[in-house]
Length: 346
Image (cartoon, rainbow, N blue to C red; front, side):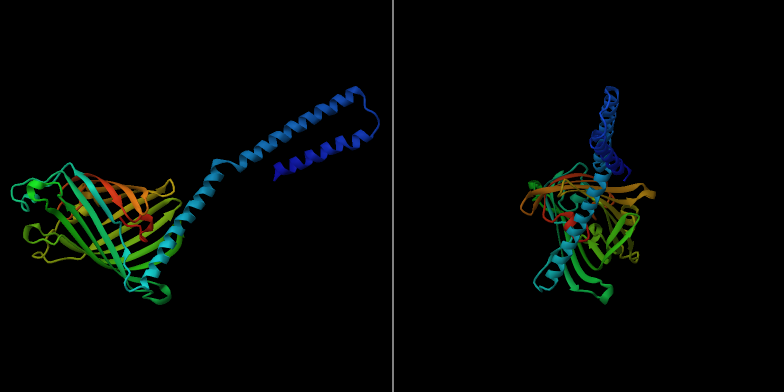
């Protein structure tokens, strides 16, 4: 405001000098030189004021605020668009919707395979370090707006994750491990803001996870999971604490699983370079010194196919290896972006 006022005042003064003064009596040479010097000073001051205005309008902070607002708005629009597609598919009795990310990694290398467990499956053969890993995940809408105006969409979801020894011809290329994960959950959309973060989604789920095996190789547990998703600019934070439903001692296949997988997952994700996605998932039990970390990076490849790089280190990658440290790097393809899965799940 003060800068614009100074510009206006300077302009009026120059007009006065160039008009009224020239219409007065002839000036002496000394007076003329003094006026010209003053005009030069005013022109320099105007140039400096113009430069200050331009700098203020193009400061990184101002640009960053605009960019951040645009990024958050774009992210909210992506999530809203996903919700609209899901509601449209809910009206189609033959439609199914992607749930968590669907991916296929033809190259998945584990530097620390669990040979002891694998020999129970394939006699005396050791597990190959290179294998395939893939995940298939869908959901079905059962009831929409279960609680009326409050909302609450009831879904059934199913996720299957497999580790396939496809290159292990000596062992007849068996599936080393498959985890089955059916669940029933209620979704609530939200738009509450807190400390600069917007809570866009909440979910309460009953989740069963098992590997479908028997006796010493059986792994399973039932959980109640509360998941809450927040966005801020290009960032997303997903908190997913869980409570394990107790089992009797005789039926519990893995009584110490909480020592390795802990009491929930925390995921931080960011969309970079328009449609590239980077996410970091943390889980485990710090008090026991057991942690698991998964880093994912995906980018558009062609059509709806995305390139996908995944790194997992620590405990809990699969049920059979929940108490074994994994060091795995995988490369392949994924179908649905993280930010289009509605709930921003891995």
